[in-house]
Length: 418
Ligand code: GDD
Image: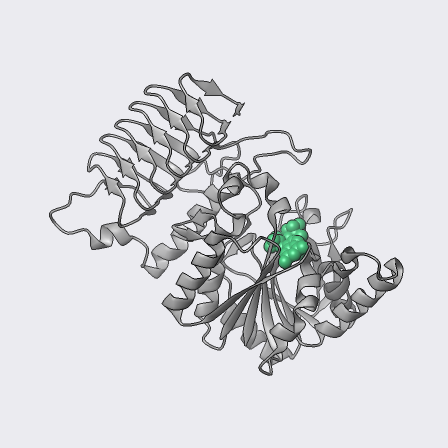
C-alpha cells in the first residue's frame, strides 16, 4: 500500500512569511520535527504502507533532499518526492503521477493534505474501507459559521455513506467537514481522467494549466453522487496549518500527542543527574543539543530546536524557538516564533497576544487565528522573528513580525518591521 502527501508549492506559502523565506512550509518544524514528518509518522504506524509519495511543485531544495534521505535511512521505508511541472491542483498531481502511485499492484492508497494537523487514524480508516468496500474521507466537526470555508459533507448516519459533498459552499450545508485525508481506490483515476479530458477539450490542449484538476469539486463530488464515498469521523484533534500563527497551535497539539505516546522529552528524558534541568511546565520539547539554564522556566507548549541556548531566568511559553537562537538571561518569550539564529538581548521581551482565548484550555490563551486577514492585511496574534534577527537588551517586540536579519534597537508594537 502507498500514501500520498500533497504539499502544494511556494506561491501558497505567502501567508507563511517570513518563515517560508527560509524553509518550504511543509518542512517547518512543529513540535520538534518538520510538519510533514507528523504525517509520515502516522503512516509508519501502519506497516502495510510501504511507500510514501510526496507530490508538490517546490524545487527539489537541499532541505527537502536532506529531510527525505534522513527519514528513509531512519525508517527503512521508500519516500519519494514527485515534482509537478506547474501547480496541478489537489487532483492533477495524482493523475499525472498515476503510474507511480499504482505501480506494484496498488489497488488502494491514502492521500493527505500536508496543511492539516491530526493524529491520522490510518488503521481505522483502512478497516472501515475493508468493511464498506468504498473510498473513505476523514471528517471532523466545524462550527456552523466556519463550515463554509471547508468541504461540507452530508452523510447517511446509519451507513455513513456520503450522500452529498459540496466544496466551500456559499451557504450552510453541514457542520461535518472534510479533514483533508482520504483512502481512495484506483477507481478515482477514471474520474480524474474524465476531469482531465474535460479541461483538455475546453482549452484545446493548448495550455499547461489544463493538467490542473480540483480533487474536491470533481472526484469527491462524483464519488458521493455515485454512492462510493464513506465518512469516517475523526475523534482526535484536528486543525489547519495555513499561517505562521497556526504553527503555535499545531505545536501544542502535537506536543500533547507525543506526551501521550511518551517519546518526546528527548532532553529531559536523557538528562543525567549532573545536568540540572530547567523548570518545565506542561508539554515542552527540548532538542538534546540545546543548552538551557536551570533557572529558566519553560512551558507550556514550547519547542526548543537544536543548538539553542537559553540563559538564566528566561521565561518561555507557547513558543517555537528555532535552531541556534540565543536567548540571553531574563528574556521573556510568549506566544511567539523565534527564527533560526536570532539573538535576544538580556531582559528583552518578545510577545504576541492571544486574541482567541480558549476558556476550556487549562493553560488558556492559545492563539488560533490567522496572521493575515482574508484581504491580506496584518492581523497578528503572535510575534514572529525571521531568521537572524537581533534584539537589543531590554527591548520589547509586541504582536509584530520582524523580517530576517534586522537589528532592532528600540521597542515596537503591532508592526511589520521590514
Ligand atoms: N501537489 C499539489 N499541487 N498540492 C496542492 C496543490 C497543487 O497544485 N494545491 C494545493 N495543494 C495541497 C496543499 O498543499 C494542501 O496540503 C492541500 O493540497 C489542500 O490545499 P488547498 O487547495 O489550499 O485547499 P484548502 O486547504 O482550502 O481546502 C482543502 O482542505 C480542507 C481541510 O483543510 C479541501 O480539501 C477542503 O475540502 C478541506 O476541508
